[in-house]
Length: 107
Image (tube, rainbow, N blue to C red; front, side, top):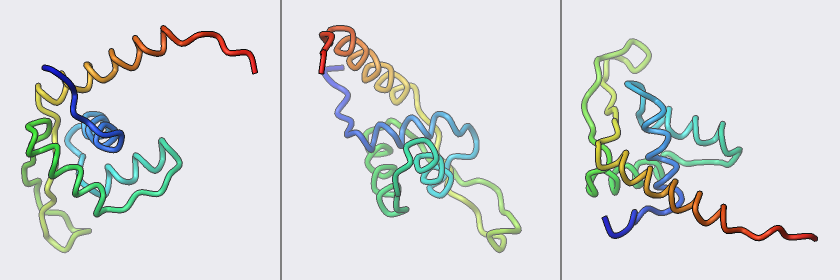
């Protein structure tokens, strides 16, 4: 792959989708990102990122079972694909390589 082509928020959504095995849907993804980053996240931004990630082949969606708390409606769940896992690792490697090159700043 030439590059990850991931924005910072897309990377967070993809990573969170990988962390939430069998429970990743827009609400749980938004909640986990808010919990881990201490920043406010809207469902529409999560939906947009998931749509782009699915279009790129980094996540795939499937319908979960019905639940009482949703009035019998099914959830659209997401799981990371092999390509998504590869692109996450590539992004991590790039960041780690650049951090290892960071000089010691004395402020």
